[in-house]
Image (cartoon, rainbow over all chains, first blue to last red; front, side, top):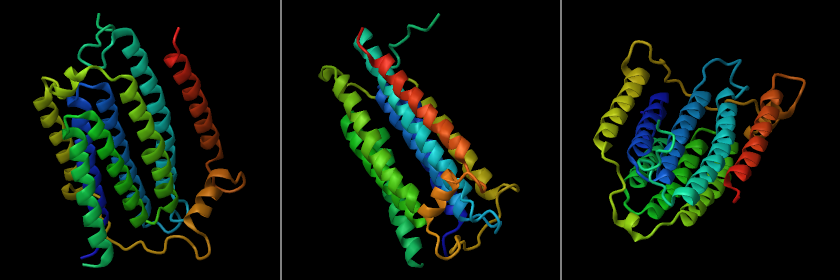
Length: 107
Length: 175
């Protein structure tokens, strides 16, 4: 039995839900960011797998899924830089990175 | 089982195991180190899928740059050892378990057993025409202005990076 698209889709789904748990359950804001990075990687695996198993011969040379993955990596790097700068700025003001205690935008 | 399947299962087990370590470890620096393993194994998955360029970019950007950024943020936000020993999960962690299990089960159902699942079990080896490597093809798609290409999204992505750099400096600056 060889590898099929479903192997990669299920792997991406498992990785996505692990990252979702990390993003929802963690108290440290940096750990929440790590969960988000795992989720983005799961999506990238799914997109590259779709690109590899594309059966339309005309599209095979266009590598659409891989191009999508490159743009996701770009945006994820920008997002990580801005989010970590925000975490450091919040830490400087409040001396905590606990997302439960950062409630200055709450009513 | 052929070699690719065996390699896939080895990589997948290490990938899921280290992802569980990332969300499960109490010490967050250990989580960040497990995250490096997650990124490296994802790069192995990309190599299995003939995506050499993305595999290298994954190592350079994720295992290199993003991990360093995260470790720097951990270093700069280090509180006393109270936080190190306290519970890393919030009070609603069981809700997070339920939600993430439901989302994962929903995706697996939609991708494999539902009637709208992609019926696709063909072997896709030898995608590109002979003589063109994956890196060359991605370069053509990203840069060449004549054929079917992604020049405009590429330029917009560079603008996004510029805005992110300026924004990170402005937000993180001491004033």
